[in-house]
Image (cartoon, rainbow, N blue to C red; front, side):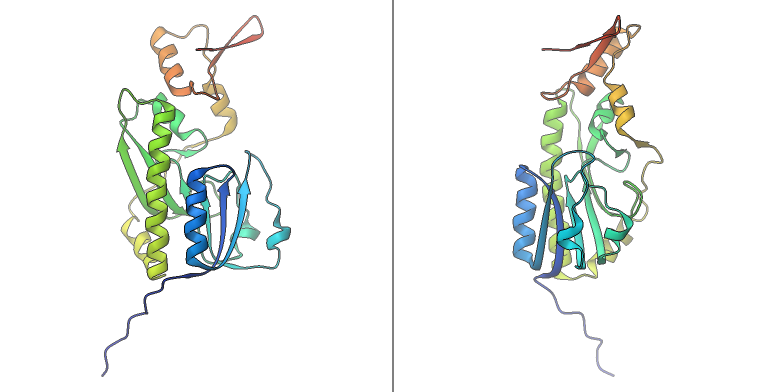
Length: 237
């Protein structure tokens, strides 16, 4: 009997749909990689939370893979079903933190580690089979912004790793799933309304709570606030 032949190594993906973020240098690097590695490549940029996908451009198309990197879009069932092999998301947080504002909650919880997670997309948010998890230690000197910079760089390396593995052999997808099958998502998921509430500092808050909330929410674009006499006062440093 002859030896069982292995599937030949690939250097290209067949058909890819990619969702990235507008004006994001990390998203652009993934775009450039996928464009080079795909025979057919389609790119849709996202701009803001809650934005709807214009599916007219891809109405009659199917894809081997869908990749999401820092995208605001939430993929619905009909779009997921257009994917023949796997829709994959690169989540800017470890499996312990699902949904929105992951980094804020990690700081608020005084977590010792943070990171990112590559996973299969299903109809639930941050719920699909996990492909890869990477983490780094949070330092007392870290801020939300320094943590996010570390996270995006880690995500970038993670995305290159996963995409290149799939280019070499699509069977690597199942190998990643098997390798990480013991890692589970948190049962809790954070939504926008709860994140907005995190930014409010109550008048009764202790000094420790106030400092903790400031560290967990104070960034260049977003600030914690307090409500006094029905007026919102925003921290301005």
